[in-house]
Amino acid sequence: MQKPSTYIGLGLFLAFTAFPLLLGIGYALLFSLGLTGILSEGFTLDHWRAVLGSARFWETMAFSIYVALVSIGLAAGLALLLVMRRPRTFENGPLSFFIYLPLAIPSIVMAFLIFQLLSKGGALSRLAYQLGLVDGLSQFPDWVNGQYGIGIITAHFFMALPFFLILYTQMYYHEELKGLMQQAFTLGATRRQANWRVAAPVLLRRSFATVVLYFLFVMGSYEIPLLLGSQSRQMVAVLTIQKLQRFNLGDIPQAYTISVVYSIIVIALVAGLLRKRK
Amino acid sequence: MNRKEQKSQIGWAAPAIIAVLLFPFVFLLMLSLGRRWAYPALLPGAWTLANWQAVWSMQAGLGESLFLSLALSLSITTVSTFGSFWVSKQVAYHRYRHRWLVLAYLPYVFAPVILAACLQYFFIRTGLSGKLEGVALAQFFITLPYGIIFFTSFWTERLLALEQLIATLGGNSWQAYTKVLLPVAKGPILTCFFQLFLISWFEYGLTALIGVGKVQTLTLKVFQYVNEANIFFAALASCLLVLPPIVLLWLNKRYVFSKVI
Image (tube, rainbow over all chains, first blue to last red):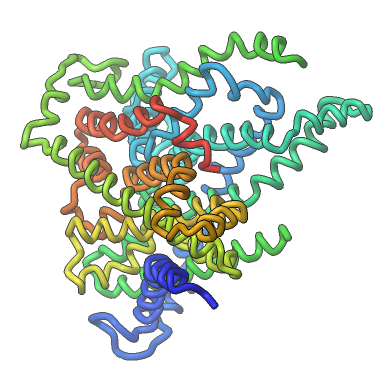
């Protein structure tokens, strides 16, 4: 038999974590099915048909996945390479402190920084002009608010890279990879073989859940694509909030439909990935 | 490769890496002290402390935002840290702890801003929309699960045995918490406090949506200035935003981030 404190604790846990979530998703589902809301006229699948049949929605989902894949792939990949080649770089000395500094930058500030650096009137464009590489603003490439999300990817990359460098540096020592590498060398492995057959699989396997969570964090990010994205190609959170805040009330059920579909896709993605891992 | 060899190999690169890592902060500081940054000049045309002096002027409202953000984050963090410490114990010792924990991850998986969008109706109906209490409650929905995830690994069999020993020796629950569990958990509590502070301090989407722009935290100020194309004040608000986390880092990076992974 459980103690009363256990019931109170679990009750509080449910009240402040699962309940708001179920309430929100439940309301979004009802709204998307026309069962609630100012303009509701009873059960309908029209909003679901409109969202699932719209190329814009699927393009938004694909764009969100693309941004998350490229930024996290590049950041985690580069961090893995750097830590395998120089595992001690960020472990001791001043770098072990300075590598934490970028974690003090919130998304909105990172977006502002990238805008000031990469936009047509930004610092890099000015530098290119001073070096004689371009003759004016118009010649500088469209890195911010462009179709390929270069600004968004750059911002996420610079936020994720220090995080993965710290993560892999700590894992390298927690997993006692140094000893494992020594064993591999004793058994005749080259440094390259020891890196790719011993260190990389251990680090990748151990960091899998974190990488998946970070991937989802980027996929659902809001501030960075809001400032650095384009109007024609949006990420899912930006599209949802924009539809929700438009003056056209007909867009609101679609915003809720997108929220529900996104939730289902994310749950399926996480369940699939975690099952595959097992 | 021995340690000395490796150190010499990265020795030349270390200052360059440090310069790259410091660049964003120097750049923000430069913009916050600047005026008239016309293209194609590399540096602002004029330098002034007027922007920083305006922090406390009522017109800019930055000082007010700073105070509001600090009060909001500190109170949310305090409640969430101690709340999640106690709740996590009940979750950690439950036989279905893994199932419960999956629920704690969900607010992060769904993206806080989408969660806020789905909950906005209820905040409007309860009169909490656009109010500080509403924003605090919404932030509580994301900080509490994080704290629970964080503390669950703290509650081990050893601690349970320790608690049982206290009971055997005649100690009550209050004594167990005040004399043993809280002192033992001092390090993790500090770490969790700092991390939850950062989550609340950095929050933008959820705060903007539930606060409908009326609860002007510093993150909202940055966005407002960016929208107004006032890059100097946006940089100034950004400096104020990154300052507390840097101070926390300066105090002790071990406490702030060591358990983030």
